[in-house]
Length: 199
Ligand code: ADP
Ligand code: 5GP
Image (cartoon, rainbow, N blue to C red; front, top):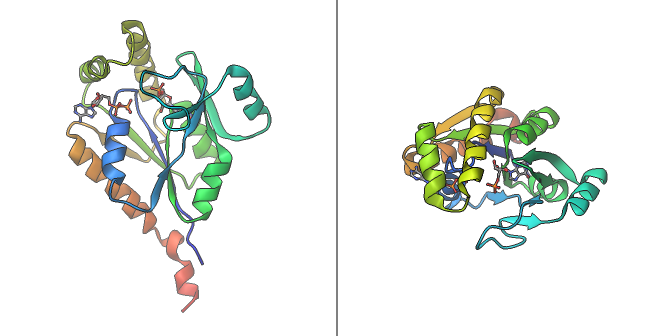
C-alpha cells in the first residue's frame, strides 16, 4: 500500500526568504513536489507562465472559484491567489509531499479543511531585515514594499495556528530545519501504522 504524502504549507511575509529556504531544503529530496498557484498578479520580469504561477485574469480566476477547482484562495495586496486542488490531491495520493507557498488567510482555510496539513511559518530575523531583503530583491516598487511590510505585521498577528516557526537568519540553517520537519512528519506513527497491520 502506498503511504499518502504530507501537505506542507509554508507561509511568511513576502521577502522572508521562503523560496530560498524551500529550494535549499528540498534540492536533494525526491519525495517532494511543488504546487503551482494561479494568480491575477502580473508576471514579474523573468517569471514564466506555468512555472512560478499560472497567470490568469480575474474572470478565469472567478470561474475556478465557482467550479470549486481551488483548494483555497485569498487576496493579497490587491491580487488574487489560489491553489489548484486536482494537482495537490493527485500527488498526495501518489505518496509525494506537496509544498504550498501561500499567505495566511489561505493557509487557515487549508488548516481547517485538512487538519493533518503541516503548517510552517517562516520569518526574517527582524522587520528592518525584511525591508532590506525586499529592496535587495529589486522586484517591487517602494509602494509595493510598504504594502508588503504592513501585510507582514498583520500576518504575524494571525499566525497562531501554525505548528512550526523557522527564523530565516542563516538560510542554510533554516533549510536544514525545514528538511528536518518534512522528514519527521513523514515518520509520524499514523502515517506508517499500516505496516504494523501487514505483520
Ligand atoms: P520570499 O519567497 O519569502 O518572498 P525570497 O526567497 O524571494 O523570499 O527572498 C527574498 C530576498 O532575500 C532574496 O533576494 C533572497 O536572495 C534574500 N534572502 C533569502 N534568505 C536570506 C538570508 N537568510 N539572508 C539574506 N538574504 C536572504
Ligand atoms: P508574490 O506576489 O510575492 O509571488 O506572492 C505574494 C503572496 O501570495 C505570498 O505570501 C505567497 O505566499 C502568496 N501566495 C502565492 N500563491 C498563493 C496561493 O495559491 N494561495 C494563497 N492563499 N496565497 C498564495
